[in-house]
Image 1 (cartoon, rainbow, N blue to C red):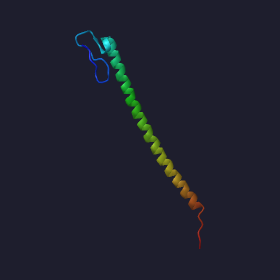
Image 2 (cartoon, one colour):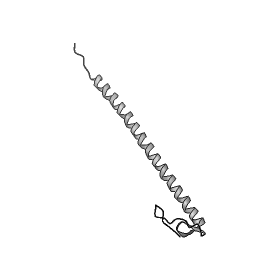
Image 3 (cartoon, rainbow, N blue to C red):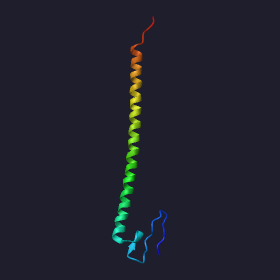
Image 4 (spheres, rainbow, N blue to C red):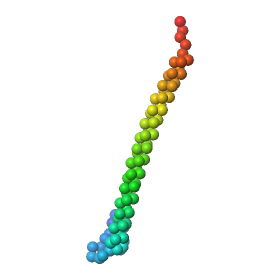
Length: 83
């Protein structure tokens, strides 16, 4: 008997020489390997995206600090003293 799992795929039938979706075992192994590889790529993509966000955020903070220093230098350079 073949049933559905939570993702809507057919579950393996232990009494036959086939598994996922009625495919021969070697094809189901390849399919599982492909699914694992895709999941690993998705995880790596998410990690890289988060790292890029952190880098951009740090660059904005650095640029903000540089802009503040420039503004202060400009302000003090044009400052006149009153006696």
